[in-house]
Amino acid sequence: MSISEQLLKLKSELPQHVKLIAVSKTHPVSVIMEAYNAGHKIFGENRVQELISKYNEMPKDIEWHLIGHLQTNKVKYILPFVSLIHSVDSLKLLSVINKEAQKCNRVVNCLLQVYIASEETKYGLSADELHELLQSSELEQMQNIRICGMMGMATFTDNMEQVRMEFRFLKNLFNEVKQNYFNNHHWFKELSMGMSSDYRIAIEEGSTMVRIGSNIFGHRSYT
Image (cartoon, rainbow, N blue to C red):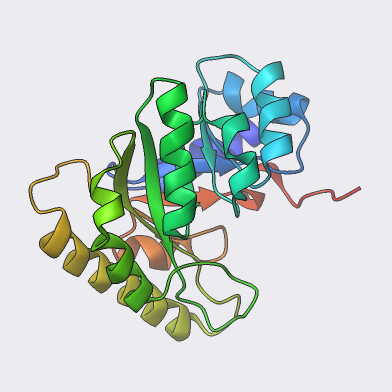
């Protein structure tokens, strides 16, 4: 199947409330443009340098999401145009995003990344760190960020029951955070969880955003 056929098939399977982030990392602009020309305009990148390069080359009506780990010293390069940062994992990072957003006269949408996997390679806040961040007086002063929800990555495993439990844990935590901190904030509604291998389970467990690459573009070339 072509990229446009894969994309349309995938979109037809997704519930209406679930947003598809087409993960375009490592794929050239020519390949991503096939998805764009098929009508898809929401793309996710892991690395700042690659995101900037593609932003500069591609149409400006694209909604770009930064889904990978973000270092504080690289925030300023994407702040003028990024639509959503999925991977906010510290108060320090939020503070830098807020400062740079102020310079651009923007309010930038962010998701708080929570560590739910049993793998040391993943980033994210623990449940305790999440509550600590949300109770911070410093956070209250930040006028140029909008926390729209949470993000998590499940363990890379064939054990789908484990994956389901990790997603369920995140959904329960999301509900608790919504009730305790964002009850009157209609924009706190996004739960970004699920990738090519586990997005169906993620949706069953409450995901509103799925980050899918290989099911659209095929396997990545790292050359």
